[in-house]
Image: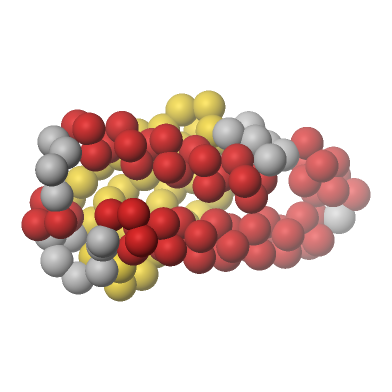
Length: 117
């Protein structure tokens, strides 16, 4: 059974791996907090160059692309949380601010996160 600190370090690596697979680029910095039945992950990202270029041409298209990439991320991240950590995930909320290059991910579990560790 990992300590909370070890769990957070593993989760940081897993989050970065999923992000790299989907976006082709890792995160610059991230922080994981555990609050009861929630995991809160704040991450500083580098904007995918092709999406930044696309945004300059047509922001509607880049916003649509962001939406579907985030949707794919949430699906893959949820699958990882269930299969690797045995979490019973209720939902995942994720938003990304392209200008600030920051994302916030909130994972809501059916019970306290520490109960799974």
